[in-house]
Image (cartoon, rainbow, N blue to C red; front, side):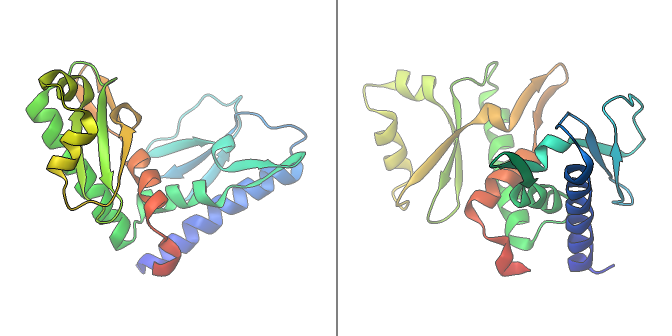
Length: 196
């Protein structure tokens, strides 16, 4: 099936559910919209309904809307994150894949037991990644973290850093990397309208 068609369909279905909710809701609650991860059908589920359908990922309606004066409107950026999570354009897929590989390599090599001082660095000009533990970098010697990064990343004009814990969690089974969060990060750097 046509990839662009799938993107448009999912985008339109999510937008429809958000607009429909805003059209009849007297107040905003944590009701849900779900995406069937097999068929990519979108549906609505009340917060009072505790059943969970198989193969479905649930999103709070609050994640699809944003404040607009006294009421709310559809949050197109948040909807695009969901669309790009399932049907990423080439540049978003490359960004997420490279970030996941960098994070995975760091986690395997360093095996941090806590993530509070771990960072993901993104080179603004080249969209290249590096992970580091601030506590280890600073304890290594007297040089500042910025000097360490500049030495390692001479080619970068600028570096954005993000808490690794925003895209990685530690579970009883090991580390879990959130591609949803990395997709959201990718859209901070990549204008997907160019690919549409």
